[in-house]
Image 1 (cartoon, one colour):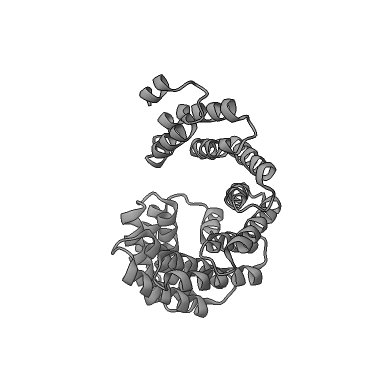
Image 2: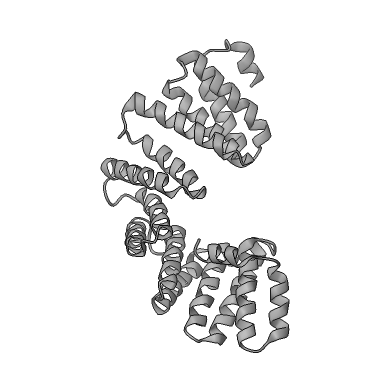
Length: 308
């Protein structure tokens, strides 16, 4: 980097891709503090070399959004995404394929802030752009479909959410095979939706399919398998199979504890659910042990995680 600074003028256009590439490497290595001044330099250089509304600024703005997200400054993340999107729309038009990722990222940010009414049209625009550019069966549509399904479910539209999940899964199975990790995760999402709609048997069958694929495709210890097992425990408990539910919860906790750690919210949720099951079986001492491991996880947090 020092050689570049010595050999190129501060506003030399070739500095921009070099700086953004270096910043991307640092961000990928989670070296955010080191990346931050490089990102600022890349953006300042791009604005000076090309002007503040030139598409050359977009990558630096995306990196800026990523570093602000890491530091928890969501307002600045939103500002960076909106500026990058506005630049792209002015330069290439509102339906350019390059806008799809920016729209999706901004919608995800708004969803995390529970600004669902603002997020939904952005998700739909992103999906429409990708469908037009890539075709209705492109695997690149799967993430947008999944995101829109999650939002639709949170807005009380389970029928629409189910259709979106099923379309996402069908696209991924066709493109990547039934044992691909994305398929497995999306099946878990759909199973959660089915369970919350009172379709425990259907959810149980889908989780069994996903777990069989996980055993073929995932490492022996994996957090995705752990979450599927916790979901299976819920379904079996609802179907009055206490022994099966207990085994699923215990296996899921082994996986989550080894991958996410004992303090992670999902691990604590698993302990809370197992404690509830053990209480129903009259095993109060063991239930108390798991309740202690669950810690002070609030009922509202349990509900949010179950439906996440």
